[in-house]
Image 1: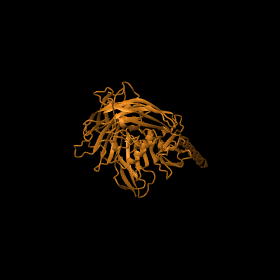
Image 2: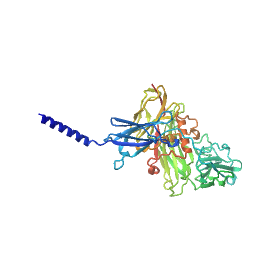
Image 3: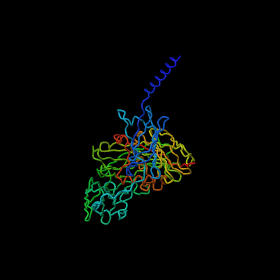
Image 4: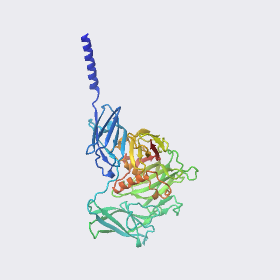
Length: 530
């Protein structure tokens, strides 16, 4: 009998050892947590990192260098990761759901590093090197006659980064960012300042009158474009730390921005396809009219310079238009015409609700090909506006055909980002308690190209910057009211611009020229925590 019991024990022990031998060893997840680029990209010490894989949850605090390391079951195929920043520093938390483990393993099984960037307030610029200055000066003429601006900007150069807008004339833009207007005798001055110890700077020069319309009357027009222009690919200016500051002289003679008389200008046919949009009524003659659609072409002309807006075209009950654009030389691939197409809804109070955006590009190899902008539907929120929810609420929405990942953003009562969650599902639960009695805003973003791993290692602030609507800059939308979180988006967009960072989409970049890029965002709603 004792032999039988002993044999059974040995058999069970052997089976247990066999099962253990078959169980894969735990897997390591490691990475670092930083503040977002606009906040300096500094390591975040003391952030809580929570990983859930299967029915196991692990958490750890980041070290002084922002690093973390966790173990998950060896057979886990996906995991969810939440990073909660230290309190009182103004940073937002992030959650990534159903992340594939394979994306963070090398071909040899070693753990790869995840970099997480938490949205944070913009950092103050350090003094750096003493400022070096230079000037570009010249005269703007049209048919030999000086062009004196009738819409002069402040003489103290207090708004150099405000882009040209329809109705302005006597405009001169250096590098795609610094804009001034002419004065007496058509003279202009552009100050160039650098604290990066540069001894020279260079950039393109674009000048002209942004006064062209399809009707001759800005109030009735649906198309706004440059009436005259000039483009100089590069202007150089030397910089010094003390007076006298160097001055580059550059006179500019304008030409007509008209394809009928100028071979440097051409027409780009554009068609809007609204078939996927649900609830958008774009015809102003319809009693249920609740949406605008428009296209904005820009000239992306140099790596070292920003783009130039070429016009604004409003589709009021229409689906096709021809856009005036700069004619890129045949075969040139280093310059593009970028066209942003937007469809947005507004409510009874003319506040912007949801919007859908399509980015398309053309260069010298395909500028003769017409564009069709097929809008992506917007997520429709399933939680009633103003609902009272628990401190860890579950938020849900209707799925969008063609969407891959949804980005759920929660903002505090002032419109500042508190948390963003990335998920392939159509609902998510906020993984930490919100303040009792507080009211929050929320919305859902998506696009048709980015996979979940495309979002990790990038700051979600680029999305917020792209969704910023400059309603005062858009000729037909000045009377609309922005969403409650548009002020936050404006701060992010301006900080990125001043830091020289672009919020443009990066996913599948090698296919953007052929396929374009589509994204959309829901309306912004509120909820109150019990």
